[in-house]
Image 1 (spheres, rainbow, N blue to C red):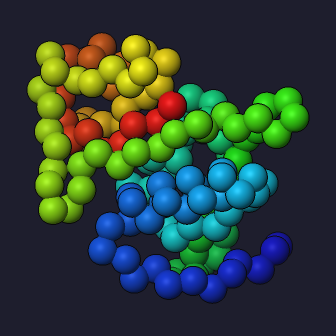
Image 2: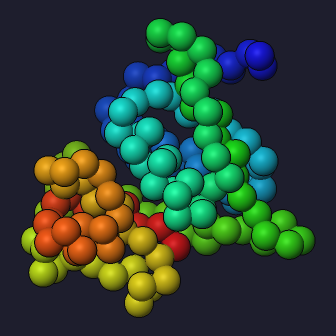
Image 3: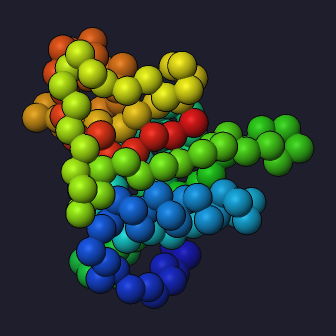
Length: 140
């Protein structure tokens, strides 16, 4: 097992921290990155994996030292799969949308990650189920 790098997991907004780590590693064209573990981060990573934006992720370590090792995905000649990530709902200003007002990212080419009463899902899944929620982020 590869040792997990020590890092500060004392952040006020774990979603922004995760998205910033992914964005920075993607810009630097890193193959892997390490991020702190949280249930919400795991839900977001599952969506990114299912939608094909990352190659995968794995949980490493135990207890406080637990971390996710995330493998980024690139196309031919290191072309980025994730071209943009944007945090929408922030701790200082939450953004909620009803089922009929869910956003479409880049005309349907991207996804919006929505936290609903039925769990974290994409805008398409929420629309299909007829539920709204808090719009966490846009990915394209």
